Image (tube, rainbow, N blue to C red; front, side, top):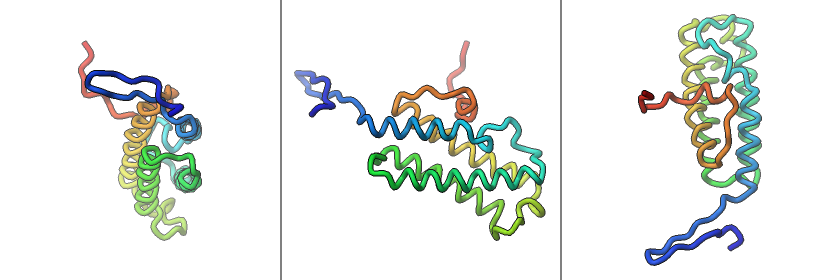
Amino acid sequence: MRRIKGFSTPLGGVDWDLPVPQRTVARKVVVYLEDRRVLTMPRVGMIAAEARGSCVASVREIRETLTRILMEPETGDELAGSLRAMRAACRRFLDVVNPDDAGWARDHIDDATFGAALGGLRAVFGIQVGIVAARYRIDLPEELAAILPASDVDDE
């Protein structure tokens, strides 16, 4: 009842604040992701072979961090849904670019395949970060805002 901040009549209705712990967890996720260069570096296409290993390591770290956050009791169901979608995108990326976990990605994957996998990862993260930011009223830093999907409304 502490979260209820309003009530309307005659049709009824209740207005409430989002639980503070969930918003705090969502904010921590955004702060963590804003510094992940694999999500925010400007060019997806021609990534040097040496940098691919760093991208793979970063995606593994993101996946592990999301798993740890999902295990926290204050992670609500709605936030957990977005985090699971991001984690699944990490898994898909790793399956494509590093299936045998033995340096294959750096040596044998072509630029187009790597770029497409990275673009797919960023697309899912862009959608989910946008959902989290809107749901929990979090302002996104410029780096993360750059991966949000384009608006479907024409600005005139």
